Amino acid sequence: MKVAPEPPVHDGLQIQIGLVGRDLRRALTPILSAFGGADNPRPMRVARSLGLDKSLASRLVRALQTTSDLELVHIVPSPAGLRILAESATHFVDRGLIRELLATTERFENLLDSVPGGRAAIDAQISEGSQSVRLRSEQAARQSAFKSMSLLLGHFCDQLTTSLFLVPAENGRTVDGIEIHRRIGLRRMRPSTPLALMSLNMVPEEQPEDATRFESLDGTANGSDLSDFLIPEACTRPFPDLDVIQEGNLATMVLAGDPAIKAPARVASAFRIRNGWSIHPESSILSLRGYVLHVPCRRLVRDVYIAESLWPGAAPRISFALPGPRATTPPPSDTGPRHFTNVDLSVTIEQLPHGPKAFDVPGVSDHPAIAHHVLERAGHGETRFRGWRCAMTYPVPLIEMLWWITGHRMP
Image (cartoon, rainbow, N blue to C red; front, side, top):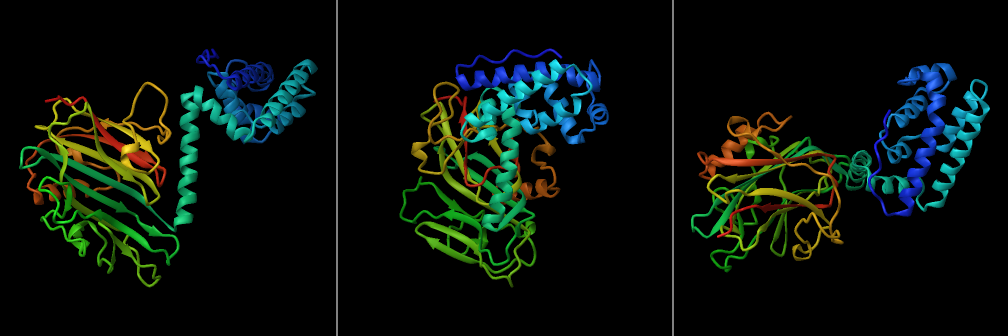
C-alpha cells in the first residue's frame, strides 16, 4: 500500500512519532504479509496461522493498512501486543525480522514512557497532524464524556433539538427570533436528581422599547408562569407540576428532586426573542446565538432558519468556547492563533432543503408538524426560510456552542 507523505511538522515529538511509525511499518510488513497474504493481509489468516487473538490480529492489520506513519502509531497495538506477535512468529520467519520487530517495539515503548501522559498524550500529538485520527479520538472522548457526565449529573436525554427562526421585526430596525427547544427520551438516572427543564432571561419592564426580551408565543413575559412557554402537544402527558426558581432576571423551571415525581420523557418549549439583533449589522460577522448544553445527550440537532427577505447572502458559522462573558469570546477565524477560550471541536453545517422536508429531523417524526404549529401561532406560517443544520453525536456538555452569521450584505 502506498503511504501518503506526512504533513509538514515543526514539532520534534511529532517527528519522533513519525519515525517510530515508519520503523514499525517496515518491521510489521514482511511478517504480516507472510501469514496474512502478501498483497492484502487478512486478519483471520493472521490469527489462524499464528494463534493470535482475533482483536489483536485485526488491530495489527488495520495499523498496516493506514496511509500515514502517524496513523499507524495511533492504531498499532501496545508494545505488549507487538511482543506477543514476535513470540508467535519466532519459529516461522527469519530471526532477523523478529530482532528488528523487537528492537522497534523497544523504541516504541521508550517513546511512550518518555512522554507525560503516555499513549493518550501521543494520540493528542498525532491528532494535530492527522484529521482522521483527530476525528476518531474526539468521537471516543465525546462518548466517554457523555457517559461520565450522565452519571455525575444524574440525567440525560436521547435527543435534544433547537430550531431558531429569524424574521424582521415590525419596527423595521431589528430582527426577532422564534425558537423551539425539544428534549426527547429525557431520563433521570437517579430519581432524586432535581432537573432544570427550561431557563429564560426576563428583561425588566422598564427597559427601552428596542431592548432584547423573551416572550411566550402569545406575548406574555411573566417569569412566574413559565408554563406559557411549553408546547403541550409535544410534551409528556400528564405533565408534572414544576417549581420556578427566580435568580435575578433568570427564571428556571425545575422538576423537584422527589423520587415520587416521574420525569417527563418529552419536553418541548417555544418562545420569541424580541429585538435580538440589528437588521443592519455594523460588522461583517454577527454573533447570533450561544447555547450551553446542560443535559448530556446522545444526539444534538441545532437548526437555524433565516427569512428569505433577511440578510441576503448570509451563511452561518459555528465555534465552541468555555462558558463565560460573551465579550471575551472572539468570532471564529481561519488565521492566527486560537483564542484561549476556544474549544477545538469538529463540526459540520449542512444546508437544509426548501419545501416540506425543511423541518424533518431524523427520529422525531412529529417535528415538522410542531414547527408549523409554532410558526402559525407566531404569525409566520407563510414566511419562507432558508435553513442550516448542525447535528452531532455525543456533544460535550457544559461547553458553549456559538452560532455566527457571515457574508450578509452591509448597509
